[in-house]
Amino acid sequence: MNQIRITTVFLSCAATLSMSAVSADESLPMHARSATQMTAAANAFVATLSEDQLGETVFALDADARATWSNLPIVMVQPDGLLVAALNDDQRHTLHDLLRASMSSQGYGKFSGIMRLDDLLHEIELADLEKNPNPRRRRLVETRSSGNYAVAIYGNPDSGDWGWKLAGHHAAVNFTVAGGQVGFTPTFLGSNPSVVEEGRYAGYMALSHEGVRGVDFMDSLNTAQQKAALLDADVPADIFEGPGRRASLSKYEGLRTDELSVSQMQLLRILIEEYVRNVDFDAANAQLALIDETGWDELWFSWRGPVDVNGKFYYRVHGPRLLIEYNRQNPNHDHMIVRDPLNDYGEDWLERHYTEHHPTL
Image 1 (tube, one colour):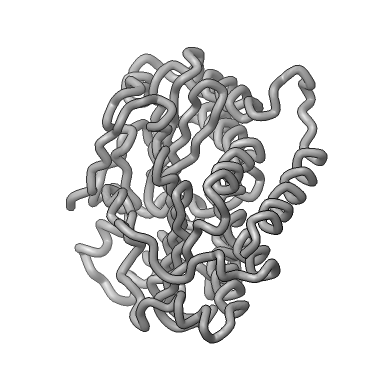
Image 2 (cartoon, rainbow, N blue to C red):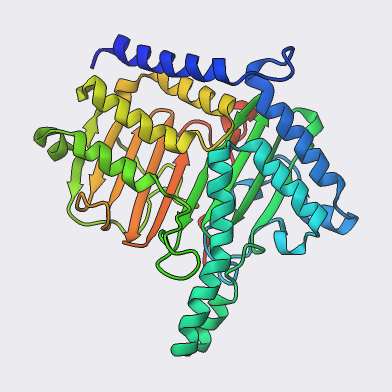
C-alpha cells in the first residue's frame, strides 16, 4: 500500500486528537503530560504508606523484579509488591488516582473492570463448588479477589526515571517514566468470563471489543488475503509471548500490511488503537508515532482458528515496534498482550536489560 496514504490517515487522526486534548497547563510540553501527572499521583500514593508498607512496595529501578509478573492466581505465583487487600480506603483511593493518571478512561475501565470481575468469578465458582465439592479447587477459588493484585514502585518518582507495576490474576501493567517519556509495555489483560452469562451482571464484558475488532478486520480481507493470514486451523493454548516468554516469536508471519487497501488499513488501525489507547493520549500517540516511523507497511497480521466471533480463535499484529496478541481460549475466556519489541520496561531509554522470568508453579 502507498505509504503516503497511510501516513495521511495517521496524521489526520493524530491532529484531531491533539486539538481535542488541551492541557490545563499550557506551559507543559504535550509529550510530558502523562509523566508529570503520573509522578504526582505516585508520590501521593507513596506518601500514604507506612514504613512497613514502603518496604513491600518500593524497590530499586534496576531490580529484575520489574520484569517478574504473572497472570496466575497467587496460590500459584506470589506477586511482587503490596497487595491491594492490605490497603486502607485512603490508600486505595490514591492507588486508583495513580491508575487514572496512567491510563485513558478506556484503559482504566478495562483494568478496574477485570479486577472487579475476579470478585464476581469468586461468587460464580463458589456457587459451582457448592454443587460439586472439590477441596483442591476450593483453595484456588478462594484466591479470586480484586484484593489479590499487587502494586510496586521502582525507583524514585522525583528522579525523573522510575516505573510502577500493578499485577494479579488476568491483569498486569508495567509503566516506565524516563526523561518525560512514558512506556506502558508489557500490558496483559484477560477476562473470565468474557461475558457474564447470568445473574445481576448478565451481559457484562470487561474486554468488549478486542475479539470483535479482530473478526471485523479478518472479514474485510479478500480470499487471497485471508489465506495468507490464516496460519493454522487450530487455536494455540495461550498467547505466545506471555509472562517470561519475551522474544519467543522470532519471525513475522501471515499477511504483510503493504497488501491492504486504505479501508482495510483503517480497520487495522482501529484494532491497534483498541490496545494502544488504553493509556493516556500522549503516551499512546508516542507509540503510534513509532509505528509511523518504522512504517505501517511493515506490520504483519496472522490468524489461527475459525473466523467466528463467538468461537475460539487467535490473532497477532506484529512489527518492529509493536506486538499484539489476542487468544480466545474458550468461547468465554480470553487473554491479550501488548509489547514493544525494542522497549519493554523502558529498556531502550534506561539502557538496561531486565531478565523476564517465566513463572514456575
